[in-house]
Structure formats: structure tokens, C-alpha cells
Length: 170
Image (tube, rainbow, N blue to C red):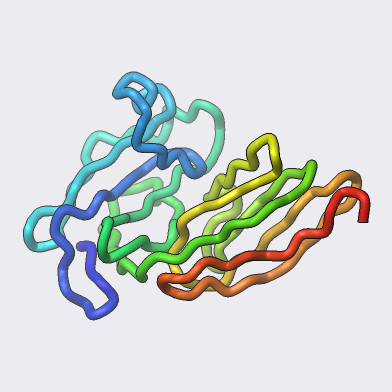
């Protein structure tokens, strides 16, 4: 069942299974199958069902993750998909954002309590990055030039967290 922060069932929430953070909704059906991405929506009572997932077909050998999202109620934490039949309930926690600039660098974001490599945050050519996330604490690791900068930030509901990253020549 997918519920909001008040414990009420959420209708029409998306429940997504995939490797790493393959959450882009603009993938074709064939691309979704290739990447092992499956999704379904909840019914009026917040119930969802995913059937026929084959955890033996790992291309590439990365952990499968599962999470829920809704345009109004927000996002759930990401968790690792169990390798056996299971019932997973999700709570949609709202929506925040992590954004900023990593000049000439790369970025990793891990939610506290989420599996490693669960989130993928892209950095464009100008070093800008941004990702919608549920409220909570996040570990950020940025690679700038030869330096690695680590920090913990807190994202609040409805707000953007703007981590300050040093420039490559600092």
C-alpha cells in the first residue's frame, strides 16, 4: 500500500522498480524492458501489484531498487527490492530538491537509510545538477579536480537544498 504522511492511501501513485535510479519516464517501452524497469500504479485504495519480476536477469549486475512517487503527495525513500515474494508499503514524504553546481566535477547523492547507488544525479557540461528527493538527510560526495568533498545536507519539504561546492581551482 502507498500512503501519504498522514497515513491515508494514495490513488494513482507510481511504484517503480529498476536498477539504480532509472526513473526517467521518457524511456520507450523497449528501453524500460532492456534496463529492467517495471512500473505500476496504485488503485483507489493505494494498493499496487507487481508480478513477474525476474531478479536473475541482471543486466548489468547492480541492485534493483523500488520506490513510489506521486505528483502531489511526493516521493518515498528508495529501498532495495527483496529477492523473494514480499509486501512492501511506502509512505510518500513530500518533495524537496537538491541542486547546485559542481564545477568540472562529478557527484554522488545517497539518502540516509537508502541503498548505495540508489540515486543517480546527472551533472551537465556546465556543472549544474538537480534532483527531486523526499525530505530527509543526504550524503553528498563531489569529485572536483583531484579532490573529493563530502558533506551531509538536510532537505526540507517544499524547499531546495543548495550545497556549496568549492570550485576546481579553489
